[in-house]
Length: 94
Image (tube, rainbow, N blue to C red):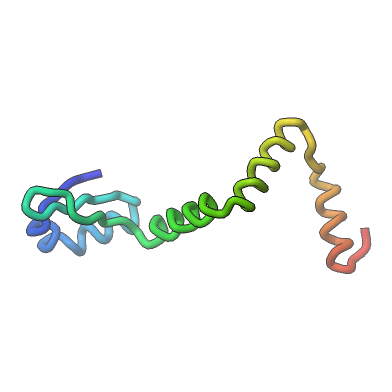
């Protein structure tokens, strides 16, 4: 992550935007010597928002914890079992 003053960011905005989009770089932009804003990609921002949504939903967190416990205990399904179940749900045969 690179920190740059806002005056420099203004002159390099196209380059910075390209780097953020292509290389997932982050930039902290300062104003009067103090960190003021971050430049990140839309995809990364949306991913962080989704993570926050999951972390703020106690039911989803409980499901995730249960899944991890099930996996650790070996309580899983074989791929052919999952496929057969999906086929049954779709109305196919298996």
